[in-house]
Image 1 (cartoon, rainbow, N blue to C red):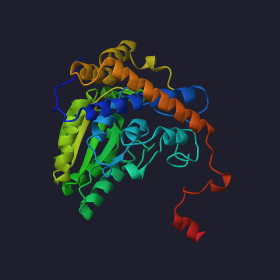
Image 2: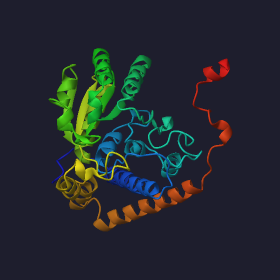
Image 3: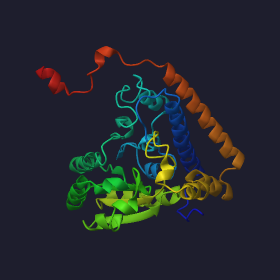
Image 4: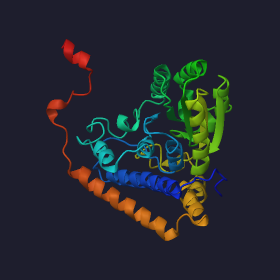
Length: 335
């Protein structure tokens, strides 16, 4: 499988940053999985490995002030939008230095300083937040764009159609990014989604695109175009990104051979891996040597290992703040 032709970037540093970000996501997930398997991480987590080109391709087209909303499989989105390893691992381990002081965990990471309005454990739960964010930008006259990430299974949620209707009526600067990884939990998309997913957006008059989610340049080129148009008031837009998750639905889903063919999984890993494809492109174009890419991977692994060690030694929040940041100030004022 070859990467599709895409608009050449003027700065080779852009390519290398995109590659590094994809490697950072994969490395973060590898470490998170090991933390879970070694019983050092509470709760469940949902791995993003295999889908790195989606998060990086999209987030590289955004400004810091542009917003994203994420999903329960949201580590990749968070890292691509600027999250740091130390705070990410602290959050997964319930430590006070985490992005949400350890109270959000794997599925509720937010970082508003980077425009990350938060991951959400509710399927489709962030769709309204993203659309509200886009409405706010338009109301205040800002040129910020919001991207709403969700999986193919979330297209069964009625909220999506309510907010797409509103976004289309008001030409909101929002991009609905559907990560179609072929499975809704343990069921193939073909068994739960009738017809075309992009046609659902088109029914509201929303321009919709389908793109190879393993091709980071194709994702980035399309997103840059749509983001520029959304800033000019031509939104909303819808993208269906064809991708694949390497792990099960969550870290405890170890028997995926019962619902997913092994040869299918092998084909995606061996022939469609986004990091391998992009690395081959970079070496073919003379942007980086294989040795330089390997050195970058080693550097990222070292950063991740140091961050894990730091997070394991970090403090937990004090018991006295168990309900702090859980309820609104209004609730405390009325108590």
